[in-house]
Length: 379
Ligand SMILES: *Cc1c(COP(=O)(O)O)cnc(C)c1O
Image 1 (cartoon, rainbow, N blue to C red):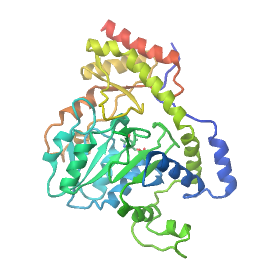
Image 2 (cartoon, rainbow, N blue to C red):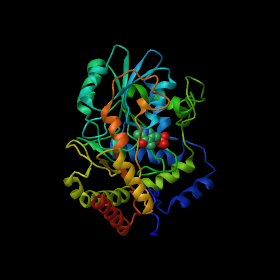
Image 3 (spheres, helix red, strand yellow):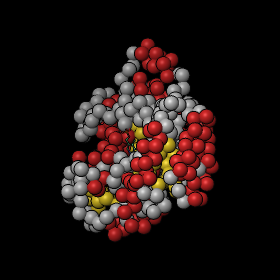
Image 4 (cartoon, protein in one colour):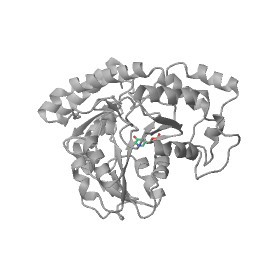
């Protein structure tokens, strides 16, 4: 049997331990220290974030977004069905109603052309998810937000180092959220970032981040004691994690170069299968960049998708499907009253992802591409 090819291997820079040792020696192992500031400042300068706060996860950044935009009982929030549970849990946790939207035919992203019919007097916000780091079509979505006075939250968990019409993802909505989970392009195990693009949210974001206190302001010397001033929670990560993330951030350019190279080899190596109609390769709209967060293709049907997973298991190669549409999930299907979301269901059934990480070797990649060809030849 050939050596196992895992689905994901988190990249390590080799500097993580050195930086963590510095943090331990500094005795500042709690949050909101030197490495947190470095990460926030670097990413803000590079991508044009007005304000950025490191969080313990993208999930937490999304929960902060729901608090900041004041989502509450009686409100409706539009969210794509084809996404991770963290995009929707904060809506339910605030007691508001989810309104699920379908994906585009060409990409798993929310279909901007179908959004206006979902907007009611109760709609408070739209949460968009840039799937695979490929931007949603933001201009029409932002126009709707303006017309109906809605907040836009970008779940940019996949989207570090990606752009929409030359604007970094995470900067287009009122708020943007990133993930540094082990499966994402840069990681600290579990981690995230909240990006705040509206001045009116900045002060309150810091307070919510610091458990409902104005401690951030106190640490900057702006006030002489800190107090309980609002609701909040413990959303800030330890300096140990911030140091780990800092070592990754310093290698971001290198990591992105390696990921894009692998992505392009898949794209070129599978072009003939796309041409034959065996699979459909990802569509990249002209307004979007590709940050090589993940490599996916779409199968003809569920049966082919399942057979492929089975076939690759026998070849000792891990490949994976992805989200299962949330409107028909065990938690939600009885509550769902809307119409069928055909594209979301189609991506749930037919989308497959291939291994993609900087240490995936050229030989391993050749083996994966070859096995895909063998499968379709023998089918
Ligand atoms: C990974 C992911 C999240 C959650 O990120 P965490 O940092 O693990 O909380 C949220 N939304 C999407 C689209 C994701 O892919």
